[in-house]
Amino acid sequence: MRPLLLHMHVPRSSGSSLHAWFVTALGAASVAQASSPDEVAAATSGGAAPAVVSGHYLHGVHTRLTGRDYRYVVLLRDPVERVLSLFRYIRGLPGHSRHADLMRPGMTIPRYYAEGIPGSWARNGIVGQLAGSYSALPPEERLARATEHLLDERTIFGLVEDPQPLLRGAAEILGLAEVPPLARVNRSAWVEPGQAFGGNDADLAAIVEHNQLDMELYRRAQAHLAEPRPSPATAPAPRTADRLLHRALGWLR
Image (tube, rainbow, N blue to C red; front, top):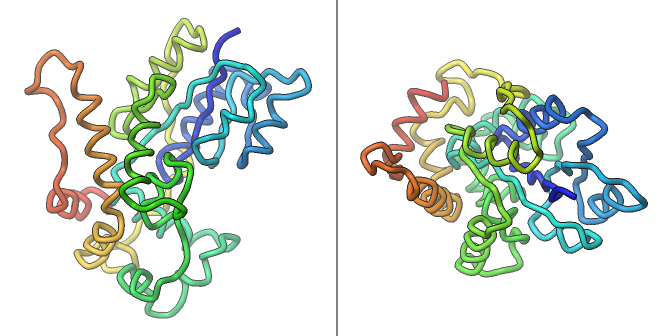
């Protein structure tokens, strides 16, 4: 039996697009959804044998599998771009638990952080999800554990900016003859320059300040993916905070 693919959906990192890619390639019956270890266990028990289990769960759900081989599949997005997209997305999603907070009059991203509004998604959420804990471990241990899990031989990961290596790896495991294209779905609304969460310098600087672990993990992911490339000149250079700020201003709008 082929390994089960555990698609760990990092919020606002093209996870919905990757889920749709699996459904297109395999059919809806072969792709289960889950959001917790219990749901992963239920989706793979009682004779059920999906090829993929996709959801916003934390790393560690593999411990609930009953002897089946597995691979984690993770798409990572530039941390500043990801969090800015999250703020925009939640403002347009009334059912989200943080929607009312982000809709307060005069709310800005720096104010959100300054007021200590709860929400692990905006504070090193990638590291927390990959480490299997958002806050129970000291920051250095969370980063170390997230790095270990990301670089583990049972993890296939890629970057939103270049998902093709991940798609090829997943297609090989699934036995697909061709690699289907990745359609972009569930995109956050475009924001007029000057509007709330439009990506001004203060917004982006606040995201950088509160997501240092995610930024370091992303740099490590970039460096690891660049290693096997034949020519160092073609490898993507790790982004500094300054490059993140200037790139986000011009690209995200």
